[in-house]
Image (cartoon, rainbow, N blue to C red; front, side):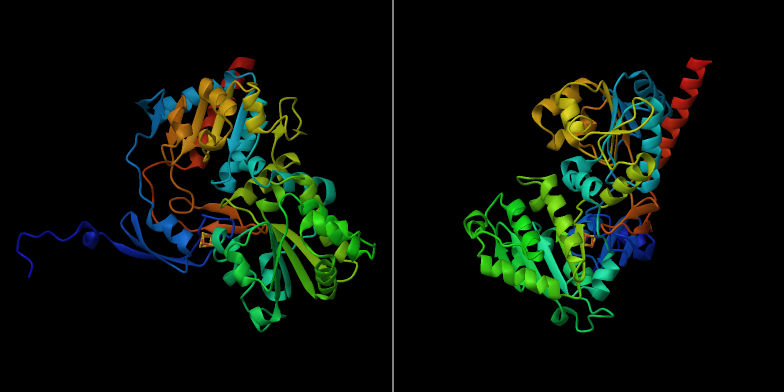
Amino acid sequence: MSTVNEAPPAAEKAEVKIVKDATCTFCGCVCDDMELTVVGDHITKAKNSCVLGKAWFLNHHTEDRPDAMIEGQPATYEQAIERAADILCNATYPLTYGLSDTTCEAQRVAVAITDWIGGCLDTTTSVCHGPSGMAFQAVGEVTCTLGEVKNRADFLIFWGGNPAESHPRHFTKYSLMPKGQFVPNGRKDRTAVLIDVRKTKSAKAADIFLQLKPRSDFELCWAMRALAKGVEVDTSIEEKTGISLETLTDLVDRMKKAKFGVILFGMGLTMTRGKHLNSEAVLALARDLNKYTRWAAKPMRGHGNVTGADNVVTWSTGYPFGVNLGRGYPRFNPGEFTSSDLLARKEADAALIIASDPMSNFSQPARDHLASIKSVVLDPKLSETAKVATVAFTTATYGINTPGTVYRMDDVPIPLRPAFESPYRSDFEILKAIEKRIREKQREKNG
Ligand code: SF4
């Protein structure tokens, strides 16, 4: 029995609301069928989410930080906008980086700012599926949506990825399990193959698991291309890849007999020896197979809106990442204009970092240089990068606090339905204010 002095928990007093069809932005699946129970400024239930999505929603809390910090000291929003515009206007070689965990609307303003200041524009794609971005430029892409995969695909190859752990709802919602228009029996109508260097949790879900030797993806893919074209393959491929020629020949025969096949490839393929040449080989294999039947190839994208970053940067500049706008027109050169390389060579003299934490994952020389130059950082959390920033803005979290658009890994745009408002401004609002101030300063300077 409760005593008369016992106050009801704060949560009981707060208003409870249900947000239907909310979107999870934790991974590239961007599942848009969440049902969130929101109590005040806490999400207490996230129906339909996977274990990663639950952690994303239920562990979210609004940080108690100033709107902005300048050189580690609390500052007003207006002071921070002024200082950020000063830094970016006065830089000789500014860099814009991040963008995969924010809305397309904010990404678009970041591109405009970089254009106005003649800087380098790069996204986290340069450290994940950058090789695929290069391969698309060289080979093109035979593509399809996850809706087509669900309704049509009877043959799936997962190559160099572990969706069971990295994209937990991919199998159940989009690819392996769901019943579709031309695969009415779902899983029973599909053949699933996993190609990887180790037996991950995803192997259990596959009909065929091919464990290839590390760093032999390129050779394996080219052998499959040859077999698809009826070219004889030397038995030395067995020693090279660890997979028998008989198994490979059987696999390619089955692929040619499929009605609709899809290769879904991960960073296990793109970040091993061969890199963009591996992605090119897989894209070319899918293209070759279209002589016999319908095949597509799609990268499995990680961050929530990294696909949006690729789309926005590509539709604005013609290239997906690693773009230099210093000469007034876009130049694409990964290695030269990608952030980690550019910072490690000590070329950038200022940085605008949006929703990303390069101080946690770049090489030591790149981190040392980033910490030594002036930087403007937008992040909901006090990340390692925000800690060394000259100007650090505390931002609202996209999807949970702010509306906007994100792209699913199959290049389909999805709207966000936020759960509750944040006391902080969105990336879009902050970037718009910085852009406005930069334009005013440039006009003052040029008369
Ligand atoms: S699969 Fe990805 S997008 Fe879908 S609920 Fe899980 S973490 Fe969120």
